[in-house]
Image (cartoon, rainbow, N blue to C red):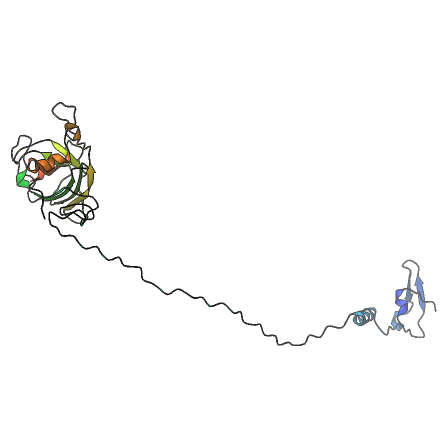
Amino acid sequence: MHVHKGWLSAFPLHFHPSASIQYDHSSRRSLPTNPSTFKMKYSYAALALSALAFAAPAPAVVEDCDETVPAVQHPAVQHPAYQAPPVALPSPIPSNDANCPKVECPAGGDKKAANFPIKFTSTFSIVATPDQVVNGSSVPTGGLEGAVGYYDFGLNSDLDLICYNITLVGVTGAYQSPADTATHIHQSDVGRSGPPRIAFPNPTIVEGSNIRQSFGCLSGPFVTGIEAADNVTDTGSASGFTIAAIEANPSAFNADVHTADAVPGAVRGQFGAPLSY
């Protein structure tokens, strides 16, 4: 019996004694002539797996461990204790005496608004009513019935400046005037008409009410948008008007407002003597 010796010849193969071997020249393999009598004690696959099993290293034995991860120690945070902000004590309120010395009045004033940021050299409070209104011919018109206006003014003649707080109640209709605005100070005596010298921003309506308000400050030069008799010069500062003129003769000036419901004027109020405290 001739057996082809290849790489499998290293493994013990057992054949039945009656088996014969025939060599296949085309495939160069030795084949049993009687396959039914050919018995292999171990299959090729079993032998290969056995060889791999012996060659593979033994798995490492992992022993259980009891390793405790240490806790991370965070440094304690020290928050500063709350401290209330310092409270500034109010300065003593100076008396409203007319002779309040400037060293006691923060703004250097000597009138009602001594503590106002701007020094006032005089202050006025005017109540404007419909019955004081006259037209361009100085004829009373009756104004706008039921309306009233409150005009509070702080003047500084040194700075040619006026601050205002105007409140209109019951005034109706859109503002209407040939001047730049419809809220003015005019120069005219009681019952007489005269040119506007200052045009203020018109008070705006307070939502949900019949009140209109405005406040602020204006300084010269003042422009009204109305020309003087020469049809060239504005009736404001260009005509020689200054805040000092009001202080020199308050009763020669008045405050008013004009609307489409009362074009000559809804309300009007004459300047009186400066307020004294």
